[in-house]
Length: 422
Image 1: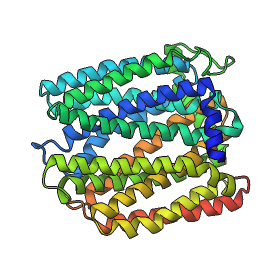
Image 2: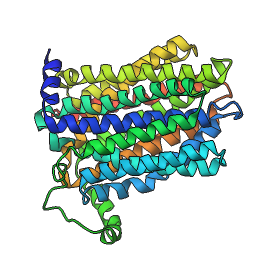
Image 3: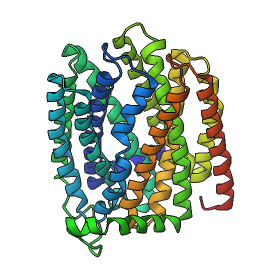
Image 4: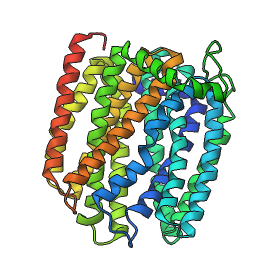
């Protein structure tokens, strides 16, 4: 099979293999940490969680990155990117240990959120950097396959990390602190793995300006403006980002709905609700893997924009057909389907962005990409806080999301006809 052959070629590339290991360890730690946060914030027996509370938590943890994200891009285009992976993961490991101590000490919620905010803030640099450096270790002809394997494998690693976190909670008598410490260990392993990559391999290019911290901060505004101007001149990249922002909004709305269903409608206990959420996450992760296998073939046959249009069309048709039952089994199938569709579209969009923008701007563009993802997800949670009933069963949300998918599908088909190369 062509997919298997390309996978073998990629995995024989030493630097790609090492970069992939950095991603897998880092994102598995993310999965562990996210389960600990979900268990502590949403599924704690003493907390009566509402959609508004979930939206507030997401706003606290994600919205500040709308400010950090563009700054991260400016730094990624100036700092040695390998060092970002090294020191970023070392810092996250130390901060995760602090979070564990706060859980053990029954610290107030605001202090817990502040600690979690610091851990995930560093994640903006690491994830944006991992996407920006991929063209440095893979040739252009295999970039679609690399975008299929690398981010999808990272998502699967996060899912596996979440599953491992569930096991630790059972063994350690529901200790969220023990789960957080496991994540700290994985962040440390990712930092050490980054040392296997040559210091100058990941860029930025030698002729890029290398500013010190003070000068970089002074020119950040101009750098962001430059990134936005560059994006405005790359129509294909801007269109791909716009489409993925809407798809991310849809995914965020459905995520909040499933959280509420698992918490109140589908289970009689907090542990059962958390287990159902784990199954949904696992189904979505399996869909991500299926997308990694299917997308390179589909993009080769249809083109990147047409494949994104097909993904959105499938979501518009299948999401209400499966979601309006508000039953665990159809919803688990929907989690798989939407995981495959969302990741399939993202692989195509990532490739469009990577091949449409210059290397000296990739860090900034992917940081803006990250900001759009965060704002869309939090925006979806805020809308759900206004619409969702206490048990999470809302036909209005399901139908509205299907309508948004339909709009994306029609728009992407029109754009694909306008630009035959995509």
